[in-house]
Image (cartoon, rainbow over all chains, first blue to last red; front, side, top):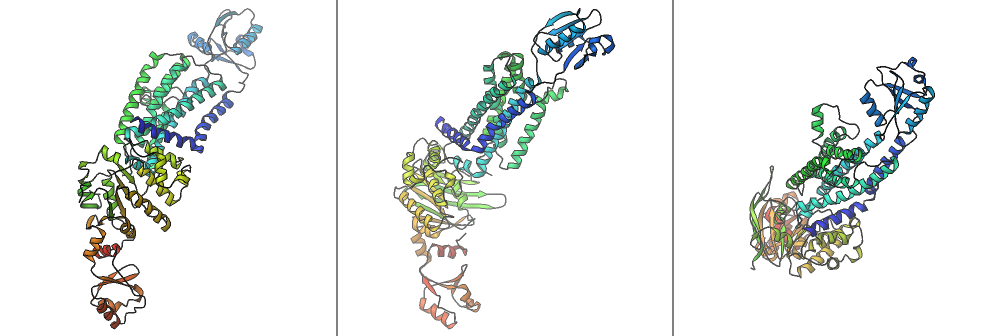
Length: 335
Length: 295
């Protein structure tokens, strides 16, 4: 069995590596994405300071500091909410003018340091209360989404169309005339694509992290089993679509039918917190949602294996189910 | 007759709109070249694909060495389909090595390359081969497991005459190694040259079965006269002769050559382009089905 599987795996890898246009596209796309994102998010930020004020609304006459130029003042009536925003550096400083002036500043924030100087020039007697906390930038939050999206497209379309092409050309029919089994053939395709995806994802991670200056809060090693199991689940999902059909239009349509809801609902671009419960329920049907939830938990919140175990179990179970269904429904030839 | 290596019993293949194979039975003795002949649509590819285990029959069965087709058959069979695409971006040698890796035993890759005269092409991308070279590669792949039985489904269709002759020589060299070959073709010259025994199929049924020599002897004690169709007057069709229409000619079979010639002369049929020859397999098919063998 291993001999046959390795023969097909080797041939598939050779085919992929020699298909220059696909190879270049596969490697170039993520880098284009990295460079594009670096251009959009990596440049100097606008010189605008955001200062939260514990009040129902901002009254510029209440204090001379509230009339400073290039500072945006945001009314925040709830102290707890305001402090959380300061901790995540969504505001640069928090001011309380309801009694004797006092303020909180995030000591990890460069902008907080500067805006503090401006405040002290206008209110030298204001009392200081330091807080800490690194900034959670949108790009940091988006980063796992970009990795997951690239993985999803590579898994679904990369395997689905290859199997379809083999079937249409008659190559699958020829393989069927040998001792090779459907399970061996599909396993070789899965392993070949898995190796490629892990390589590209690792390159992408390194590239983006270097450009945007990202450091994972949790263990990067924990991301490896997550990437392996997540990719397996999505590759196997692609195989279930390509297992028996022979029409590019149909397979393309079905793959789009899967990818678009995942693009919108799996949390690539925005968080689903606050969305209706049924939307969140639907989103958790998709493997990508579990990949992204677990990746963000590790990368942003420093989660460990125990916290992401439910996601890993879901992905492993769906990988097995999809692969079994794909092998069962597999057709070697056009009916 | 030696024990059959393959036995086909009451094979039927029914599709929603048509019956491709309508109850076919035959036995293939080991070590011979067995031909399945018939025009396009006769059911020969369907029959052979059921024999190869690629298509399931609607009813009936195929036995290999007395057993239903199974893992042993897949290890022992070499197959050259009518149309096969190979994996892209692989060289000739790599394509052969891929298939060699799928069998537990067989010939060395280099030996197969030599057998099929592919030495000079071994490093070439398999997509950049000519039609004849491509067929030689597909034959090499079919031979990679040193098969006991080799299926060749219309292997020379679309090849130029030179490539066809070269391919026939290859098949004859394989025949000399006492391999059982099952060949489907609509080229009678190919069947006459290569086949020890034939089955002629028409509309999914066997219309004749035996050795080419015996079949010709049984059906043609006569000689055959050919005349260009445009030189054959319509009125002459009423003559008391056994007249058959082919595409561009009229064929007359007769035991009495002199009497037939006399009849034609009396009817003032022009004989300047008359050709007299013994019958061949193509005539046999025409005789049996009233259909030409050409695609």
